[in-house]
Image (cartoon, rainbow, N blue to C red; front, top):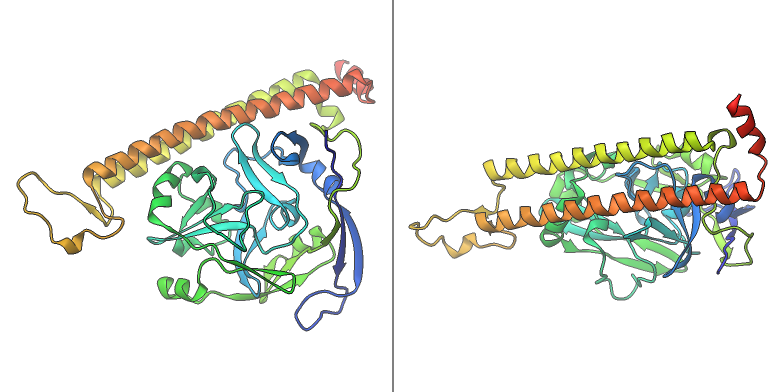
Length: 381
């Protein structure tokens, strides 16, 4: 079984910045394993080896959704609200595993964001790039449609963008209405994420996209405090000097529970609450999809052509890309309902697998005689 303890060496700014805005004079070493362990678990994946998955997240969580997009000298840059985003959204790659859910495969190259882009029909879409995808060569990458996020272009630059995302089940529709515009380039070991043409985006929306300079800071905590403002966006930007040295033991399914919260009854109650929360979320998403579809049936969107039996053939100019008839709209809705059913099946499976891993990990710790045995005795009094 392959183990992992990523060690990072960073060069960060003190009070001085280079002309490029890059930092120059502080060396800091950070461990991916130690930094991410409090927020999730390291597990073994048959395909990618040792990977990390977040814990105690909302069932609607996806990478690159809790935060905002900023345009910098490096192109489209993701400013994350997640405590672990400094690592997982700028190094390595995310992958949507049908059983484990979102897993992060470590990597050693920093980028403004590792995502594929789609654009068109008034919508912007992005999805985490899968491990091994070469974005500096062929960018026609096969990605699970359910891994994408889509939002109206007028909402694209708003903070809290996750509040404006279209239901994931509708991705199967928006994939066909948008075009792949993924575009990365590397210059002097620096990665640029161009993606959507910023000038085209400005013309389409009628608004100027603010430009920001990347400012490197001392720690992930400093980056969260500074974030975006005054023409700058703060990042904790270490450069990996050793990506896979010998790791500490116990990576598989490592769990870090609160000793006072690991009593079996408390775990059972919390896990039952998690299952109830998931079902409530799925019901809300299902109803939201139904409402959107019903609205489209009553008020067909632009591009829906309805031709009655004895109506003359419409002019050829009407048949533009993306235009559909009523039957095709119904087919789209059926595909979206099937996607919703698949989403629900996956999310239930992911939660079940995660809770089982937690139970197994805690049981293994008990069998080794962990210190919190005394706290269990105290809990029973």
